[in-house]
Length: 380
Image (cartoon, rainbow, N blue to C red; front, side, top):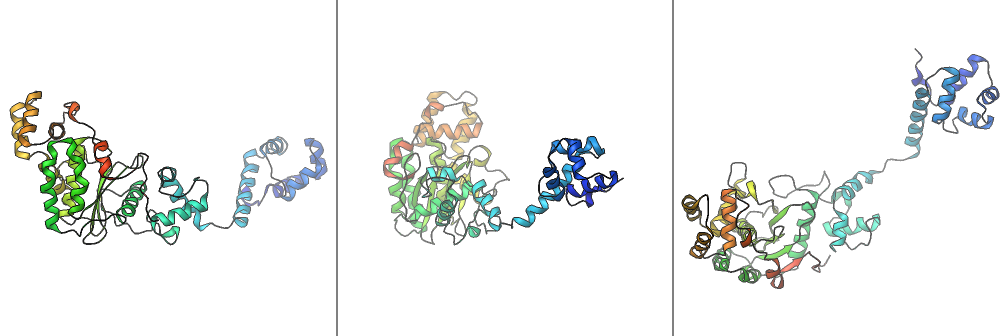
């Protein structure tokens, strides 16, 4: 069997086939009814051999057309390797443009660029956004150090959201934080659970207790609920995404993040909380200790565990409306807060939807909000 891999380009094989028959290139051109100059260029490797010519040569010499085409492909690839130098930035661009939601970041005003196709401008804007000296230092790249604490490896969209949180937090002003102030914040916030309108007071209370607070819309598919980070030992930051605009979710996630602050979680790297619903809002063995204690504190803050457990034991499976309202009055919380805890504890997520009111519009006038059409100006 002939080893065709030794031929550098199809012209060499054609030359041997012509010699074996005693043919010239002119004879081949006549037989194929082809241009002699074109045949000469193929033989010299100056013109690529196409599928049509490969089939014609097979008809004459019984060498499979695939052989000619494979030799041609190998030759062209070898030529390309010589002519095209490796681009060390190609891999980085693949991560940046392939993994980051750059179009969404531009729409949100996070990157000062008009068009994602303006690659140099996008790269320059990303350097500013991530505070990096070169694209190789941007944290989303595989070789960059990741310090974010989360139950799983943060996605690039989640990391971008955290960077935006950090940008905005650095523009905010609050008194120096102490643990005593943090616990005072919890005490001041608890009475607000009784009324949805009271939620507007949350940003002021947190600022007065040394906690910077912002609401930042999540990026598509990031599934972020909240985060806790520290600018320094006296400047904790809590950010919520309001991914679920419901009164129960707002209070649970906020108290969850406050517990991270009280326990000084996130000082060595941001605490990113993703999907704090369902199993992730539980206390199972699969959760880290940091998340478990934050979930327990949040649940207890909303409705005391013993009270909720006793109520379920007495009223399950019907949960009459009047009894749910009575429990809300007894625990001094909005019915939507009780509804959220009941739904989670029982898995009956079809219940009490009428009480799960939206609260983002209530807190918006008093909170720093980035998203839903609003852009917080930052010194980039």
